[in-house]
Length: 291
Image (tube, rainbow, N blue to C red; front, side, top):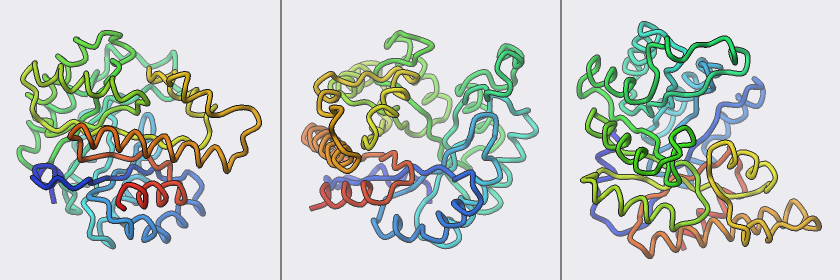
């Protein structure tokens, strides 16, 4: 099922989806798949599986998607980063997904993997950005895939310009993208202002907020810096030096819950939860937002 058909629902009920990553360790990967019913039982409207920089998890992403698609009645969307791939490689990957019945793709440019830093020339890449990738999918596989794309409510770090981010997002939508999932953010005003600006530019396709429950503040702060997401000081202050790992998770859960509730009260009904494959905090958050 194409995810775009689910996002057109007129129901006012709060709905959520999950993102997962394929564990690199084979035993952890096997355990993740064998225990996936834990997440399935939480009834997400769809799930997505990440794709490592330069295709570092290509096989595991495909295997996870194939397994989940065959065992569970949940629309699934593989991430696919095109930057370091050739046109033929991308075509074959998309064909492989089509052949196992996958109808949804998150089309991303991706980053240069660490082992190619300083060696890979982005200017010579076939897919220099997600716009070129989106156009390729719609040209080669017309009407085959529902295409998702990324968006940055605080501005893409390489643009550092919110107006340019919105114009670029509009180009991706005009080129065939069906909906967008945002980078994580922790101040809802960025998302709400972003949506308002997008609507003024004529963008009317769904832009789903990406929610990251915090369980380790130092890890999230480092990642947020890389992706240009600001964490308000009032949130950082909640995680003092004496707080235990268990209490960090409780605080992070409360922050994510309050963030979702505020957005829901402002008319947002779809949420994409970055689970990091964490069972307890994911289940606790879902229990809170659905009761």
